[in-house]
Image (cartoon, rainbow, N blue to C red; front, side, top):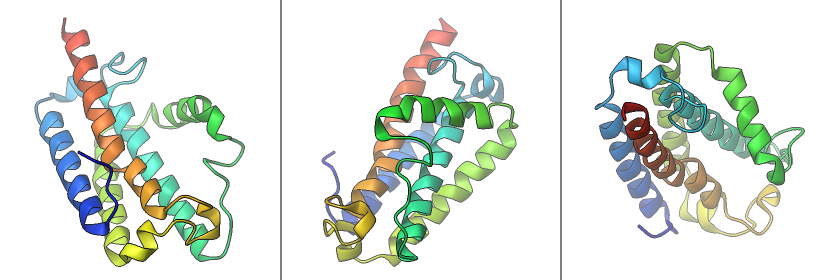
Length: 167
């Protein structure tokens, strides 16, 4: 699937990739979802927490931008080149949380991000530099990265990892 360049295409990609991810998750038992070593040291639960955290970061960037602020990207104290360290911090932050809590937040965060996207116009999402904090990028590009592209990455990585854990 090509990278979305319209609100309609973005919502369709989110729906498609989220559906595929949920279909994969439905094949797993709770024990499989908490077993480490699926994606590096991470369990499926840890990957879901990672997805939630990135969705919430993008939503936070958007809210800050609406207030006229320039958010720290990707997070306070981190540069884009330090994304692996940021992802490790996210893992440490959520690793001891229960599966039920993570899955509930996974669903709620998804609903929240889709609602925000639905409220935006095509121009809001796909006009480069529309918001000062996005500079030459589009807001839509950040939403794509935190949703459909991230769901696809997660599903592919978890599918490979679960096979490896089963073997």
